[in-house]
Amino acid sequence: MTAPTDPNALLGEIGRREDDVLERIVTIVGRQTTPKGEVHIGDDAAVLAPFVGEAIVSVDVAVLGVHLDASLFPLEDLGFKALTSAVSDLAAMGARPRAAVIAVSSPPGTDLEALHRGIADAATMTGCPVVGGDLSRARDVSVAVTVLGECPGKGAVLRSGARPGEIILVTGPLGRSAAGLRRRREGCALDDELVASHRRPWPRLSEGMAARGAGVSAMMDLSDGVGLDLHRLADASKVGFELDELPIAEGATREEAISGGEDYELLIVTDDPDRLAMVFLDRGLRAPIRIGRTVAEVKRRTLGGEDFERSGWQHQL
Image 1 (tube, rainbow, N blue to C red):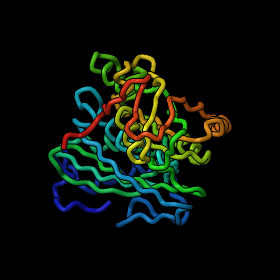
Image 2: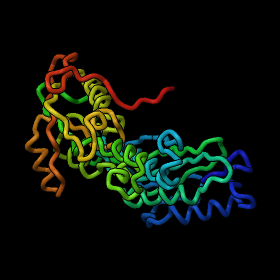
Image 3: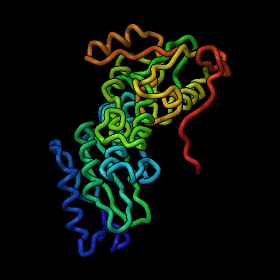
């Protein structure tokens, strides 16, 4: 981790020294064993062993008050969501994670240890070690995460590879995260099952690698809602689609399933759904759920025979 430009950036609580804060953070995030020949936290930059196949890189930013309501959830959850949402982008490409670097900006007094405990929990659970990062002073709390992954053998799965006449599937029921946020606002406890889906989302890494192994045509994660992300995939692939129905998670509404966002299930398109199901079964994974098919007419985009309008989460920039 490099030193910030502002020498006061890491003071936080009165009297805390920068090196002391960094030492505690390194203790928190440095849980995993460093592979032989690699250098993680502690130098000016990390050193990683050569990647196998294609190297996959993605970055995501989580901001307190935008991606997490500080009045409803602890700061640890922001750290957890920041890393897992970035790792979900690797899952969407069918990649396995190799490493993450974290840049945190925050005002003085921020509980940086709590924030990094959430990051460390996510790193351990996803097998994506934190190998470096940076800290800086700012008016708001934000966490920028860059993740590195690799795709051995066959190349990464893009969202632009779908062709007309293929089957569209999702890896699980939709709307759990949005329903969890609603239930938390209604007073449900943090350990409520749906609330936990919102505060501790899980990237579908195993499913993504299985789908890539099955040779699927296109894939992406549902971070902004199927009502928006499916249109993005169709735009990239220059196809239309006809959906039969959507799997709605128990406790979620139809609107939450369509446009709630942050489910991080995978949207998959393939011309061989039986092979996909077989690969998933062979790896002990739940079979994906069919929701429809792609069509050649780009402007034809329907759900149950009716127009399927774009609807989902978008930042107002």
